[in-house]
Length: 343
Image 1: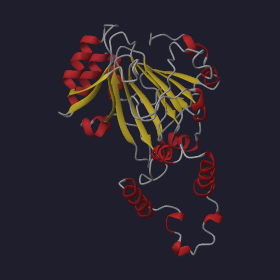
Image 2: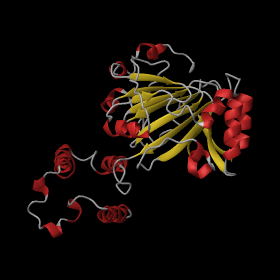
Image 3: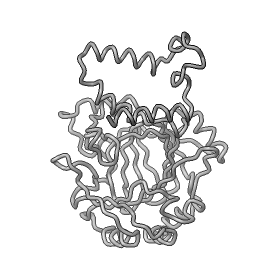
């Protein structure tokens, strides 16, 4: 069951904790951190946290008072799935997507909250600014000059397969309890990733069931566990997950709320690396081996090494996109790609 603390989780080391005195200390920590960390009580003074400590119904009432009268997207799983939102046996999804107003969704959660066999109900990555009035003003983390995307995640007991995200992530538990199991970026080979184009939520996920791992089928998962860390968070606690770190996320309580912040240190006008990987699978992966070796050299030359020899022989005014990118030159590349892909 998702509530359990045994299995693989019992022997994993905890994510290290950090003490944060104020916004300036958090800013310094985020600038220098290269690994995950937990801050206990970072958002303990949020009104939403106080409402959740009183009861799950109070937390829902707090959100209902601030919701906009818009349809929300909600995932509804299957009864008996133990909260796991994943693939079915045919590699479709074991949940359906619906759209409804928040009072209707919360009424369904009211009915399901005390029923362990009820299907999981999950609102994922809801834009705080777009769907609520005043919620951010009353409940937010001061992240200095960063311009994060603030999202709220609301649901019953759930298990979300290990995945990673391109932005940095600060995730704050506002109600319920969350367990995060984290792996460094390089562990992707040991997590047995599923398809990149058929995913539960846009990112490739681990095919391993963390509550019942099949080590005969996924033997390298033992190697991944040798590098794993776990954190169980209470209301008010927060965890920092660096860009591209893999994380398996569970809502352990009957009702859970998480608010997270995503940001990138690179400009917003830069493209998404996943798009480049997808395009490379389309154009390079199935070439003859000698041609693939050549393109690997080309990528090293122009992208990964990107040394001075790439442009030293070209007049400075004629280097175009070989110069460090600007919004204008990035736009030229994007336009060029759109024209090429439309042919």
